[in-house]
Amino acid sequence: DSGVTQTPKHLITATGQRVTLRCSPRSGDLSVYWYQQSLDQGLQFLIQYYNGEERAKGNILERFSAQQFPDLHSELNLSSLELGDSALYFCASRASGGPASSYNEQFFGPGTRLTVL
Amino acid sequence: GEDVEQSLFLSVREGDSSVINCTYTDSSSTYLYWYKQEPGAGLQLLTYIFSNMDMKQDQRLTVLLNKKDKHLSLRIADTQTGDSAIYFCASGAGGYQKVTFGTGTKLQVIP
Image (cartoon, rainbow over all chains, first blue to last red; front, side, top):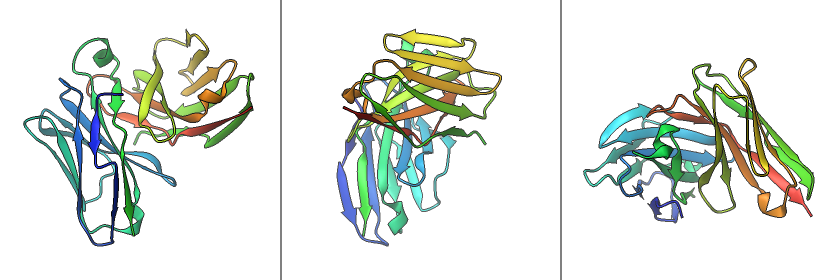
């Protein structure tokens, strides 16, 4: 158990809909990353937040948005869903102190599997 | 932009050595990582190497880094069925910089 939690575990929805994925980082970790894992594109970095502020952006579509709240949990919002958005979405948190922070170890949650029908 | 490439699939027999290869493009990478993803789970850091090293050994795992060619490899000695997983190579500049992951290599261990 990495200490990172994600809900829900599975989500099935229809095209055109909007969903929200939730992530709680490990206790004390300030930085949250979102990734999308699909069969054809591997693991793609979407976005990073640090202590409530956006820190880096990757291959995130305009239909997707995220935020990190004062309690450090984060939400990824996916709207106008398309079939191609079906994937496993991971959240990871980065150690804010200790040895793991020096080499930037990321701790991954179990993921949310999104199926768009 | 940064890119990390690795082969998609590797099959080995139980007891043999496995070698998973990776190339990266970002010459400013300070850390190179190997993450393991078991079925139905998230990624977990297996090992990492600092860019000024060329080899790191940790029990059955050996990481080799050729910084000139930007080539990283992971050798698993005496591969077991429990090693069956997807292995991700990744590179990063350390600190709060983002980490770039490869597409993952699925290792299948045949009993």
